[in-house]
Length: 203
Ligand SMILES: [Cu+2]
Image (tube, protein in one colour):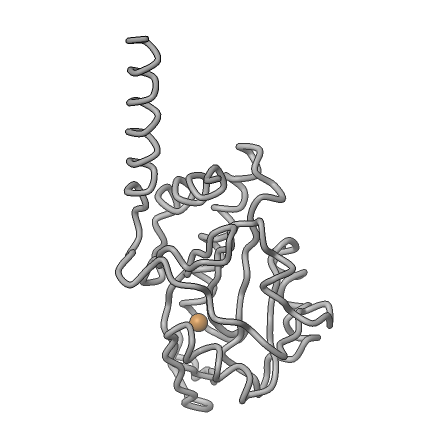
């Protein structure tokens, strides 16, 4: 009897500490992930959060012509993906990249970006401006298109398409609830890997 009680206590304790052990920004969460409508994947298929229910989702926001921020974020995400694959969690999570550039990020451009950069298992998502705007608003992503800007690189003038945008990752659990976010472009890969595993193992 004592043994059973001890086991029960341990179980309850570990279940409790699991829920508390998310390491991102959890303020305002859990929150039902707002519906994402009318968007399309880089394979030209309709994008639906419901189709991904049962997987932990790692969502970021950016554009293919982004000079620094998005390449940094996607490199970290690739590292996270590799670690989770090595730990045997393939098919238990999905990385999603939602465009902040309806003007230039066509389905074709997103697909080319994904395959050229080796992000083959990520889902890139785009759509019409009004539909994307709704998603940015619902997911609290700031987006400001600044057009073409000239920047100097080692004495050369380079033209960049500049869109200011929030750099962050939103983590959605298997039941479709936003649980936490990681802000900034330098993603703490260990923490994200840890948290995704915690959420994969939730009932
Ligand atoms: Cu970017």
